[in-house]
Amino acid sequence: MRLSSTGIKASLQYILGLPPAIRALAVAVFVNRVGGAARTFFALYLHEARGLPLTGVGFMLALFGAGNVAGGFLVGVLSDYWPTRRLIVVTLGGSGLSLLLLAIAQPTWLLGLLMLLGGLLDGGFRPMLQRLVMEAVPDAQRTRAQSVVRSSINLGVAFAGLIGAWLATRGYLWVFVADGCGGILAAAWLASRLQGFVPIPRPIKAGAATPDRSPYTDLPFLMLLGSALILAIIYDQFYSTFGAYIREAYQLSGSWVGYMYSLNGLIVGFCQIPITALTDRFGYRANAATGAAMIAAGFAMLPFGHGPLYLCISTAVWTIGELLLMPQQFALVTQRAETGRSGHYIGLYAAIWGGGRGLLAPLVGTQLYAHFGGNGLWYCVGLAGALAVFIQQRAVRALLDTPRESLPAMA
Image (tube, rainbow, N blue to C red):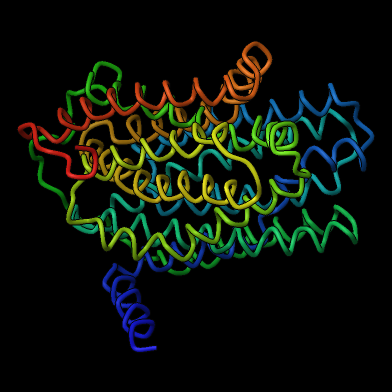
């Protein structure tokens, strides 16, 4: 009990040491995600409740994905001209409103328009979340702020799956109403808490973007984006080919995808803060390298075992990789984007993750699965992961502008 109490106390101190804007953001993303199960039911809602054929469902989902990519980039660029505190409220509240309208829209063309608009707003919220972290906390607290926000998001996801499943039994309308109201309520909360928010001033320093530096010619940053794209494609196999593989190779029902989804959310929700606090001492390069390697390894190990327990171990491996990688990667991007064309840097990063996950991952994964089989897909994932780690580490070394250092976890 003493150990448990000490851990809880340390986690609270970890959170309370952050600026009020970050604590408000953590509450907002939790509220938003608690009701946020509508996207999980997009395909079922459009096909079963609205009567669209599967080809039409695919087109609608592609509209949302395209909007997500475009929104991430465009809103990121727009943040160079409009205050972040306003854009984050508009995108969060607008995303919620679009979901409410989706529940009652009738013409198919209006459904398509709302899917595109919803994707734009949802994608636009992501870079604003990162920019608010960049503007609200000093460098030393960035990974801490990211870990707290990610924990809040994933705790919300853990609840959302249960709430969404219960609401779906009473009609898809209620899933969209809950999600939309959650987004609007979260936006209202954030608007009230960010009144008078002023970004902290930052001096230009080595490794940061200078006013005349363009992200489109910034080679270390572009290398980081390249590695992020590969990792995004790997990570999102969970949402595209993973379910088919465990049914075929593991002889498990599709419900196990849901179990692994919940396991991932619970691990991130409860372990992100303590793991970040524990590993902060190792620095960006060691954590990012270990995290990227574990994401790839968690999927690449699938052909070498069988059964529910092994599947849980595999999921735990790539989830821990996610815990190690994402706060470090976000912190590196925001450090590079501190001055100059900040919105372009953050927008490009959001677009890369959105495009890799929403558009390229299903296409690449299903093609590899069709040509090389399920096991062949995961072997390719292992090779791609090794390439991603190599590119990422060269990029991180240049971004930090520091001498080559040893990587304890990857020696």
